[in-house]
Image 1 (cartoon, rainbow, N blue to C red):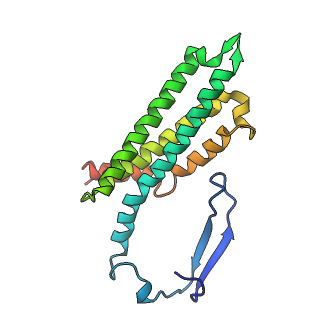
Image 2: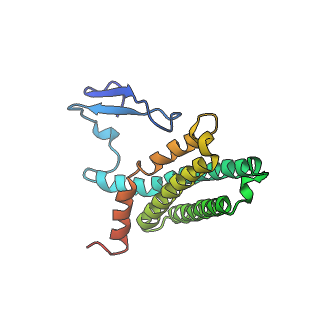
Image 3: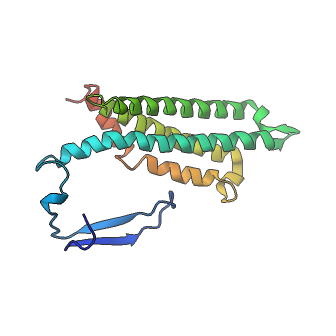
Length: 197
């Protein structure tokens, strides 16, 4: 699509809950004709091309989720070391330690899954749908869990804009939604492992 095509219009800039640094607009197509020269692939190949593109982009969303999870873990760990209750840092309390340990495991597992999926794509594997969907889904869920736990560790401060964890939690949510919701990823995974016929 190119600006100026008859029937092509750019919608309003959306005000989003998270990832505010990335502008989002709707593209409106009304009886819009695209010249053959602008077509990607051959006629009738669009759906297959779109699916292959998703196989490549889903690990990128997973990588975004891993970055969010790492930032949330780093912030929570630093805060738990500096915040004192009952004369000691809250990081010394077993309940907080268990939360931080779980957060670290989720972030690490997500990172490994994303790297594995990306490596398959780099090697031009015949199909990377399973690994791509698993990496995106697991990393997005991990980011949401880790960011939510970070907000919990910060307590009331975590719910304020003074600290970064509230933004990380808002940003994590979109990773569960775009490039196919995590529910769709589970359908793809089930199909790829042969559970769905």
